[in-house]
Length: 239
Image (cartoon, rainbow, N blue to C red; front, side, top):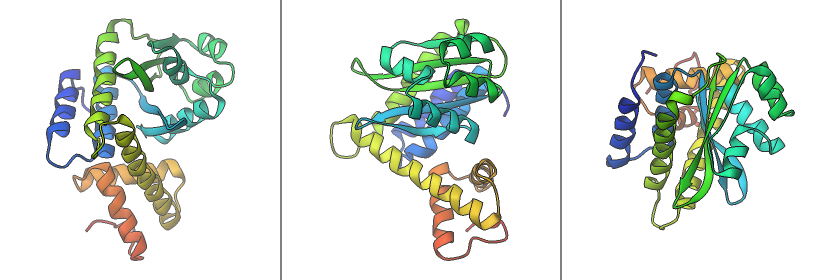
């Protein structure tokens, strides 16, 4: 992806929030992908607390998704720490990452990441999630903290704007989680139909969205419609 600015990413998120038909899954996916380009990081993901359960709302790759799920399962890692303390968390270097998070750290380093930055997602003083950023180089985020904070706040505002009829953040979170579940089902359908592993299925889904100029959520629903109609074959799920 070509280099873009944080301002570009925020402008796109703002446009999605005020648009007539907000696809929260697609908007979140675009936001975190944009964040990776603007901040020169390899991967990003969003972990949230939904009714006491830790859930991944979006991730830029299957590898990043696995890392977030591992943090949720072990209750350890940068995202868990930022959610617990309500402050930004960072670490640089393999030894420091493993030393700080002995259960999750080895998986982070083993995935090729040598720098991590987690930003809390907060609403009216309450922390409900975290934005996790992964960099392959052992380079910190000291000079980009304001940009990281702005992007994390954009994630929060996007979720708030996704509320349905109740004045509660949980409504938007549950709606986003339902959309993400459709994305996961679509990945599974593609993996089964095209004999792909899950990382390749995720790439196929994102490629479909890009080629057809669809949001990730709409592309996932399209895949599932085709799968139910038994038309998911020959690597052609376009309308």
